[in-house]
Length: 307
Image 1 (spheres, rainbow, N blue to C red):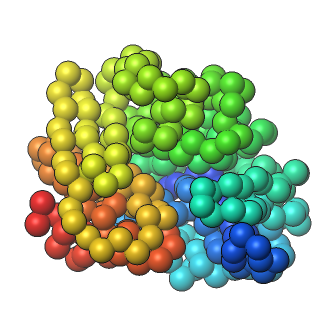
Image 2 (image 1 turned 30 degrees about the vertical axis):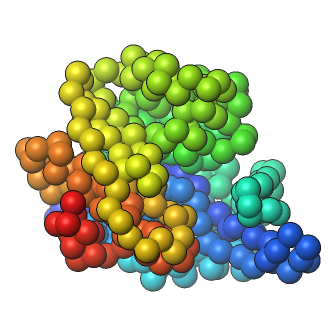
């Protein structure tokens, strides 16, 4: 009997965490939200109807409980979520304008993720695996994920990568940035990512350097209200952002990379401009609700039709 038939075809491997957000500049009140870049991508893909898993480790306390319950509600394959008797990973957002934060997670559960404990046969069934976020800037997890990406590349599995720059990605992250860029089939970046990762203001040069590391990859370059561009070889496609009533931009980037991969999996032979249109529409759709709420397929297609 084939035991891999009910395994997911898309996996996002990395971090799931809890955002602790201050209610106001002078407040001592905080509220928590489940999150994490790679976890958000998994939820976005699952909302599009693709059998999906988040592969990572979370704690066994109340923070881990909330992430587990949200993963279950999102329809993720819970066999890929490892629960460990370790502390949770927390992002402390102590100012929201401009966003200022730090992470608490010394020896936390996420760092102890073990790919060898994932369900048997999962690599044979998977068609695409996504990497990114702060999981690739936190050792020893980062080394494990890069090694996993190499194995998947050898298996012929599609790989996407969104560095999703955060303050802890300093010069120690440089080698990982290059390795993951060289391994990925699809890479998503923004102006903020490029400025932070390369630590200078020549954004065009930073993007050119990134592309030189893997000329064969496709690059989704998101530009917020200015839309996005897709770069493949010497060709590029531009797409303006649709006019929508923005409620919250959190999770828009995660939705856009998930949508691009979804479009590639659904019809890889389609024109690149169609894939870009779907990605831009998904980013816009994610802005219509508060928090990193994955947009529904119907809403994305409705917005895409208007572009």
